[in-house]
Image (cartoon, rainbow, N blue to C red; front, side, top):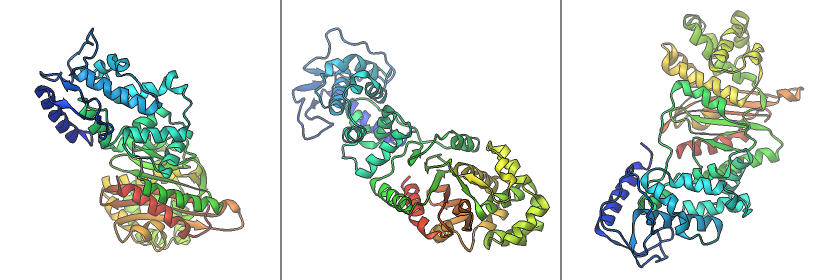
Length: 442
């Protein structure tokens, strides 16, 4: 069931009573202070069902009896007037309103088609103004500057305007407005992401030169202010970085620059240890003290001993299993992307939660001496993470990375931050706080 379905159905039931009683309409529901159309009344009689086929009246909408079709045409005309900045006659929307009232179309789809039309495109409304118009029309509030920046960035990364508009329509204000005119808007249903969808979701994300959300979520203005402040500070310091947060249950998340490759340093020890414990639990149990030393203290000698014995066989098999290139993992400390590290941590979570040895091995990841994720969130939640950091004479080795699983109160999530910050988690702390604020609000 969609997140607003219960409230919408209740409102629609109330509206049905209004139709049946012939109650007067005394206000413009997009803008309650406007009292037009004040001289119309709802037609008496039952409201058409959501599935009934309703044919347009040959005489058009009546000026005195407001049928569902007429009400919807008024709604569409007001939406289009708000978007275009010019008055749109509701009669021009009547035929489409009949389709929507009958269940053969949706308000969302009609608006998406209008935004994609030559008529709207010819208005040459710039991206900034387009976002602001959509927010006022579909949310009833002005869009904050950080929200505008965020959504314009998503358009710059390839999301078309009509899809941005639909994203903005996914809110309770829009739902209640449509319901008050006798129709239910189309909403993305709440969903549960199954294990087999995790890797497809990660691999399907396009190039991200700007931060973007996954799963139809627009962060709050306050969260975006935190996020952009953290990102701008890193950018001004000439620090390259990428991040990905993905809610394990819903698939909702936020990502940025997920295909640039960074030096993993010791962060690779986390997925390495998990893949070893997954494929050879008895062997991992016999090396427990070595593995925990490697994870807790990031001991390089412990990692070398395990590599001498097992090479990178298991982590490469994991890569094959989840659909990422195993070639970089021939190296002890590879250069990989945030997308790849996130997929490996999703597989690590899968191991923790679905395999017999997973809970035992998972406890090895919970108390690292040095980890941004653990130090920032470990007092609130159980966290399982592994960081890496380095700076040496090779500029490509300058890195600070952390990745792991956060067992948050509103559901577990995987988060990975990769950067060219030299051996210091502190500059990345505001970024992680912004990502946690994003997830906390889901």
